Image (cartoon, rainbow over all chains, first blue to last red; front, side, top):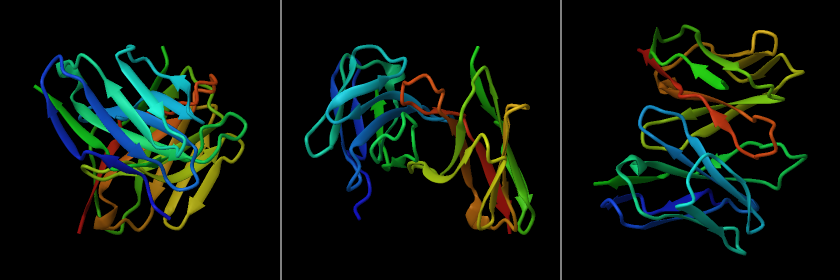
Length: 116
Length: 113
């Protein structure tokens, strides 16, 4: 069983640029969530994708967007990068939603984004 | 306002002792809570899920309690080991059909040999 993988591991961008982060979900999982984790804080929910549709969204501006592909892998895109976007971006996959509950999340190692 | 709070100060204990970490929440009515472990530079790893009707749940040296009256969950590690040193995060589902987890900021545990 392959776990959740993310790429790249680290990334340095400058303010105003755009970035794309990638995630491969764990085998058999069709739900992918993205979180932003600032230093010393807990992960903050960005959005979730289920069967290629956005299924829920946190309090993030529209310049944060995503995609999920038929193989359940996912991308997070951030436009017009700001200094405060510097954080660890985590992808988490989970099995099919059951009764609307958010079940155990399987997290990837994250992508460390630095915006200069 | 809605909040989920964990002790921001690191917990420093001697090997072999029991570590107890606290998670308090305000203005949520979660049906369950989850606990995760996070090592530096790594993603969180799921440890335990406890439902509102379970009160207590155990897994090996781990024990979690859930008190919906106090709006609190306690996470215990018995016979702690230096390898237990990590940050422990609690998370809840706000039950607003948003499919998100709300995480606390975590408590760092240091177990001295």
